[in-house]
Length: 67
Length: 230
Length: 246
Image 1: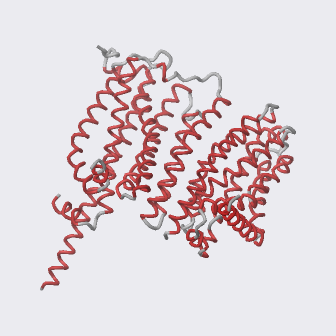
Image 2: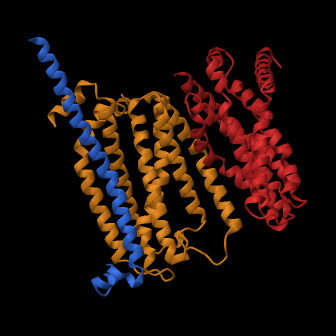
Image 3: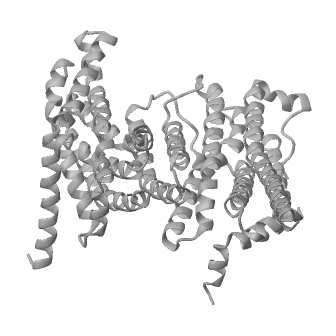
């Protein structure tokens, strides 16, 4: 069973001086990977909104025509 | 040679002759890349330092890079006029395989751009104080390398022929693919200057040439069909 | 009979509706595998004798490199399927794969240079793998660029498929030539630990991270493809119904 290799949480964050490199890499990974999930979801949401708007417009046009 | 292969051969030479004739009428198309090559090489000692030691160390790589860039310039026009005057649609309609047509056009293009670049390179080697051992290697590797670059570049040219400003797009998509040729070619010249044999480099370039010769005209033919759809 | 699933897979509508059901599971799975693998790797594996704690960047860097390269093949194969069977969906997958692959090469390059600083003392070293990743980024950018400048969507799809296939043929050659070039110029003092000699206590968390990145890649690819489906099928009735219902 693997055990915790650091003496304290502070030690874990510092990583004997290499903490800045490791944690900045983790941060960059979180930003880039997160963006790859959030970006398509935002695009998707915008597209749904646009489709709704377009549908509402065409419905307005057709109801106007029927009167 | 049976009837069919003779027919294919006639079609091949007909396109080759036609293209060479067209290029001959626009002689500036042959001269422009050579002038670019010359100017770019002239800039080098002016921007750096004219000491022969430095230039000799840089010469193999620099001549190769400049030849690559000079070869990139005329690629844009490879299929352009055919696309604009409708000859391309005629090629697509004929019964001759498009592979051969494209190969003939690439050959004509190489004879008018790659070959002259390789032939004037010793002159530029003299200007950059290239050590004596490097001249043979420079011409040989450039002869092989420019064919490969013409073949790869033709695919890029076929993909971008229908774009209005395709030249820049063409260089951006094609340059990364030129990398292996540059590495092998420039290293061969360096090795020859240092007094080593370059048969390995030439064999590698030859193998790469055989591979691109099989694949690239096919890819270019496919790309031309796509481009002609617009 | 046997080919029915294949053709159904080519239908954007079928893909969209099926993935709607898969997405929650995929998100939960990806996150849990990644969190476990990353915490295991960062906190519960022994320190590397030569590189100290900075080697732990491998759990972020190496899987990204693997997926950046695999992504190029995904893109090229999707393009080839689209060209051969003239299906719509593979082209959408191909278009979606390009930005994801480019982002992963950027992640690989960024974490690689951060790792390089404590190891080599410089953020950029002309190392064979560094250069190869950079060239891979250029290849991805070429496909993205070509996709964006083509006047018609149909032409853009096919042209990008051809470019991706030509790139696929050249990728191993580029890799080999860069590797060969590096072996000629390699400075004797710098030597990375070989990945083949990795200790088993580091191997399992690394494997988990690779699996997590694969799941993650699939997830991102599905999300981008779903957006592309809505964009291209906007005129069909099922998309309009779907938009009204959601």
